[in-house]
Image (cartoon, rainbow over all chains, first blue to last red; front, side, top):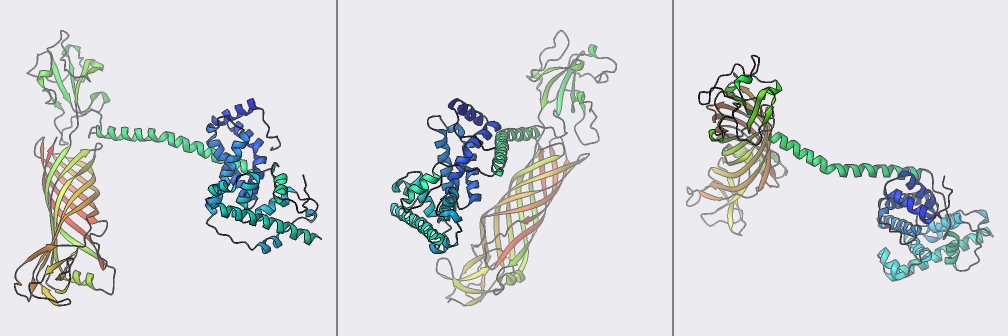
Length: 189
Length: 409
């Protein structure tokens, strides 16, 4: 069951990681159970839907197990795993970046059905759905800027776009989200 | 924590709500990860096995290389024994003594290891005599030291080691390989595939096509893979000749920009210079058109061998790579000054390298222990076209009979 907290004492974490290096399946499963819930939320933010998020999560964990011997215990294991997950999401995004999806903004958020108490309680689920409704390029920039704290110059390097495009995408993403929230607010009234 | 959107900073709204939460993934995700990890283990195992498999393959090939064509590991082994050590039912009890050696010593050459219990006379199978009561030639007499007080003949061979029954394995002889020099005459034919129905070139050429034949000379090296299987390769030189009947030709611009008559053969084409002033589009009649193609061939065959007394019958199949070394067309242009003058020009439109498959049979009659006379029948067919024509493709085939001499080494 995935009900254990991610905070693992350092000595236990070291044992688990060494077990993973040796290919111990129980250690691999324990690491998964401890870190998967946190990583799943991250993956949901970077994906279009739950299915894609689970695929990113799966790819990320597999990459982590395959290269866990490269973890040198110099930083937080959670941060290291988080970077792997983001890389996994980026790889998936690059693989699909040729799909130039143009989304009419108005149509997109009008078709979204948010919960009735949207106005009063903006829960995780509603916000995730809003991020997932973003066009992929906007979603990536928004995630990297807002959640990872990257500068536009860094985002431009990661996504192989210009700094101006990064700024423009972030601005458009914010506008999209703001309009979506406002629209639903009016609808609710 | 639920948040209330009041038009404030939208970044903070999302960061606060989704920055540090958790969400349970579906259970099948771990199962998929587990399955992939199992696959990784299998892949790692295969990667780890790869050098071992390669080493085993190399060892198997090496084993086949050194394997006796009779199917045993040692083809000829020299055993020595003292008569006093032999009992009445000893395998060597009935052997004769060699006149060149001390009376109390026997040197026996056995073509199959008797220790395997497979000793047979070998007579009637066209092989060398089973029991040769002289020293084999492979072990020079000077390598035999003086008899020890115990009476055994010592042969200076590092592989010698005692064997049951007082025998000493004195040395082994590597199994032979064969080199065959041959000459062959072949009747050739060509299958033509027309690609352009609007241009009747292929059919026209086929109609004009007369006889075709080729001659080959070459050397084949045959090496035993196993008791009755042989691998064969070598090098052959062949000249294919095509003879076309007289036909019409048209003046065109050749590769150098000069006006020449285009002459097609079943394989390629050439430009025959006009002996008189000719304009583009002028027509003329060619004399007999002879095309000559020279190839260097490298075959690789696998043969099965049957032995009937002195006769070895080999049948096999294989592939060959053929390198075009020389291609010409020889003809004359009728109706022009100097029409009788034959011109030999280069033939174009041919592939430099072609491939083919072949089946062959060979009768090899052993004249002596070293030499044999061979008669070889082959059927060869091209795998792909020999030309690069766009109008038609030519697939040659031929049936040949050859004779040769085989030497055993």
